Length: 506
Image (cartoon, rainbow, N blue to C red; front, side, top):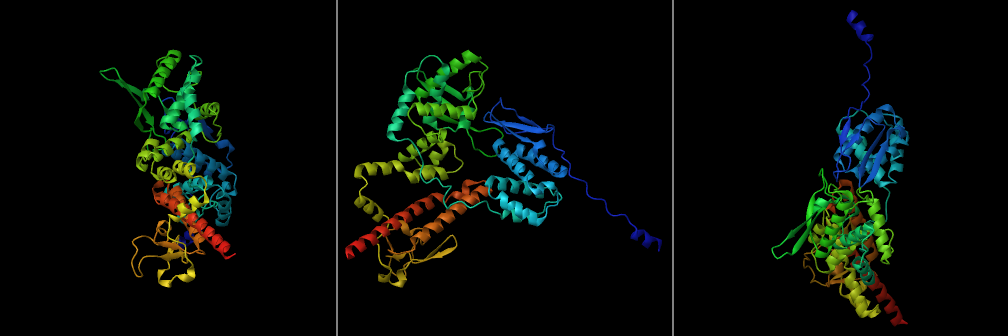
């Protein structure tokens, strides 16, 4: 009886101890340059780190988290700073700031209904949603109380606000017109005064951007030691620049790849190095510096190049280094350079963007336009080269009708195939039809439906790549771009055919 009485009056189990942040006093972060701070002091109320010469931070005093959530958030940020690039860590910091302004900040456990309400607001911003999703997954992986796998699956299934199909695909790469390129080259080749030296530095950056197309962060990361030259026995000099890569995931320091440069660029870099070492000493490391001898930030680089472009009569305020990169990429594509080589020269992680340059080839279109003008007859000829003749649905036997599936949607009534009946086509139906001469589009076919389905599917490829952080999922993108353009041309051709038929009737 005494034993039973003891059980009846047993004390309730003590609650699990609250989570405590036990991270290191200093977190080592990924750095690009030797003069960039390498550690974040986690003992401070404001954590600060740098990238591209710009400061990034998270102010813990401004976050309205419960004490336990604050400790969990600090542990997550310590992990993110050590594992991810500085700018990605800033994205996570921003998502935590947004989270702290919701009712979830009051503490754990989170009510499921409240979580769904907060997710509806978070999904308006893709970055906020991705940051919250990664935070929650990190906590689940570590078995932190209050975070469970089922709730994570709910968060994972939440999609960010819908954008128009194909909105994030670069359909046409920008570049310089011929007259703009001439003005730019005149700006580069002009005779420079010996002083101020900053003007010669800007001129050098403009030439470097024109020849190699580096990103602003690559300009920022360049050191004097990255420049080298070799002098042959006949006194000819050959120059090399070891360009730091900007987007090589998983490396503590950026990989550097050799780029052979022209004699003109090599001589300008050599003169520039002599000048800044004379002014700031032989220990000066960065290749591009401000008047105090400190490394130029990405903001200063953008402002300087924008000034040079405007002085050359090119006023495109939203595109600076990217404009030079697109011009280089498109120029290489127009010369017949393979996509994999363009990707290597531009430092891309995949050939998706490079294939967009190859596919777009707007300069070829400009040449055709200048040669033939905007003649409607010429346009009809070019469109007719894509497919066979346009036919009427009523004139086609059912066995020749083409049917297929795009983005899980069954699509028919688009046209007829000229292959013999019961002959197996080796290509994917619908996808391959719009660039096949055996395909005879129906004048009133469901071509708009095909275009919309292709756009949805292409957008899904992009969403998959964004969620996984891997552009390899985007391999079909260039082909989708070609197909969508072909479908658009067929739609226009069918419209013109219908109008012409109506005119003939009248």
